[in-house]
Image 1 (cartoon, rainbow, N blue to C red):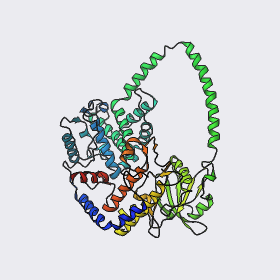
Image 2: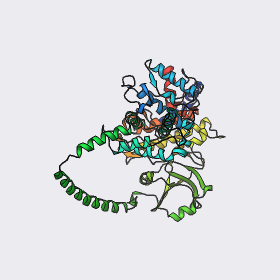
Image 3: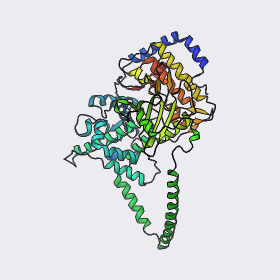
Image 4: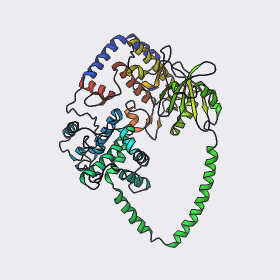
Length: 519
């Protein structure tokens, strides 16, 4: 395992235990100092993360169809992204006028040549969509939200208008102010843009971990209008209309060949899909449980048995026929079926006292279930941030040691290093004996010791993702160590990973870095 960040060996953990009193006292003082540092120079409520190339950029490159003018460009994009960060935590979208003035002042302080006009229009309290929350966007513009999310997010620009780009622009320009009866007036046009940006900020709030892709979408929407793209397409279509008839015959023959090929391919894919998801049960040492047993154990997925929900599905407590208490994860999101396969194949072979045990699985044509041991004391997040729950310093230290042992076991597993990729308090469960166990291996990746894997997209939870991984997409064990370090900070400080109580919201990692630099 890499020694670049933290040494998680059991021997060093025990050495840490011997010196814990002095270290804990020091770190508690640091945490208290952080908790008391609740002011910022300009009192901006947003965490505006300016782009590295901001000042050297062509700041008048795009103007969002005339909504902005002056030296905006990346400034406006960074402001939108900061609104998304805040919306992710509060559900609110736009700032009021005084909050916005403070944030504009902070941007002007960053660059004395700042002359971006348009940000001031994104203000709450002016009617229409200006006071929307994310919930309001879903309720009033749910179809627009889904279309823009689906048509723009798998977005890859190649410098030419294409079907994906056109669909993205159409989804953007189809967003209108439904209650606006004065269409065409300046105020009506501003309200239309308020609704569009409310939808865009709401989507940003769900994808704050993938800033690069989000800003690609910002840039394209800011640079183009649908009418301009359609005109370019028409010009190209007119030029192509002069093609000679001989080529059409060739295209016809090619088309027939393609149809035959696609038909054969469709038949092949159909046969592949008819095979079960977990094709080789010998890959799993966990028993396959019948659908009937799952429903009996959970009292037909009764609401009284419901104990939580994640992005992949819902979790129910239950009791098997052998009287063993279990937690049953019902995979309801088809997009996360890969996590079902990954957990069955990875977890079934892995057994450790500090890892939640996979006891079995159930797979049918319509639904899938994962059956785990039940940890009666919930998860660490509930203990840190729930009401009426308190952890002593000894309990916190024991949770650290248990989690470190589980993580070390994963990273040094003989058959290959298992990178968890989603270490956070809600994925650290606590059993009846108050022993901590790592859980939720839906994003895990198995690789050779000391090796890395390049992921096509950043996966994990915002605030816990290693900045190096976020930049280069290299999945490595050190990424788990970084996430574990953030959990340690939360155990010591009691702070959430993104603290919105500050006048300027800031991630816990950035708070600590700023404190160390100032010290």
